[in-house]
Amino acid sequence: MIFFDIDGTLIDHASASAAASLALHDQFAGEIPVPRDEFPAAWERIMDKHFERFCRGEVSLWDQRRERIRESFAAPDLSDAEADARYWVFIREYERLTLAYDDAMPCLERLSGIQLGIISNGPREQQMGKLRRAGMLSYFSVMVFSEDTGRGKPHPSIFLEACRQAGKDPVGCVHVGDDLTNDIHASHALGIQPVWVDRLERLKDGVPGRRITSLVELESVFQEEEFSSVFLENRAVHPASGNSST
Image 1: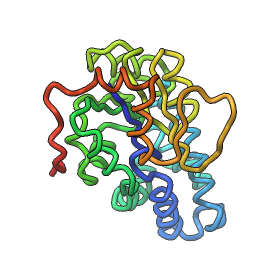
Image 2: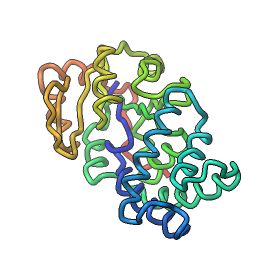
Image 3: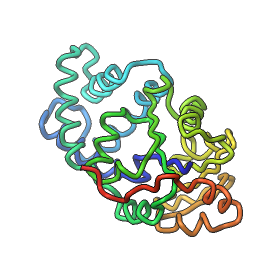
């Protein structure tokens, strides 16, 4: 099975999140104690901090969302209802703006007939919505999200559950993702072959697996000797149609 991460790999999360955070700042002008031009970066740091707690199983999905809002507004006593209302200002805009990277759909089309899966830390409903709007949902036969195991990447449980559902041993799988900790080092530790999508061209040393800067390169990676056997073994019994999901 060839597994894909979603955000930063198939879907441009960063651009949508930055724009949606500005919409939130504008909606509550004067209530967020961070300058507008600095808020997208601040929002992302706050989001990562609390989302990592969710992935570790320390808080619920909605509790981490509320804590993002409380910290962003410097309002620790904000009620759950008010925090939820403010969060929805962000998420409605975010979901409207999330788009696939230009190289994502051509990559999936070229892999038609190969067993493909998803391993994502994001909430199932939201993440499946992104794939559906992008016309990608039908390409994936296995989809595992952090809520399915109670722990997100880099915890081994989410990878092992994905392999279990696929009926594959980890050593017969590939994981394609953009995050060095959550995707690359975590999958490599389990014997899954990682492919790092380094869109920002960070070019770090000591990274296991194969590095690409665009999904355009992925098909050629699977022609390399170390990946070819996995690629051939994962030809789907019932090839994906390649049709967009509606």
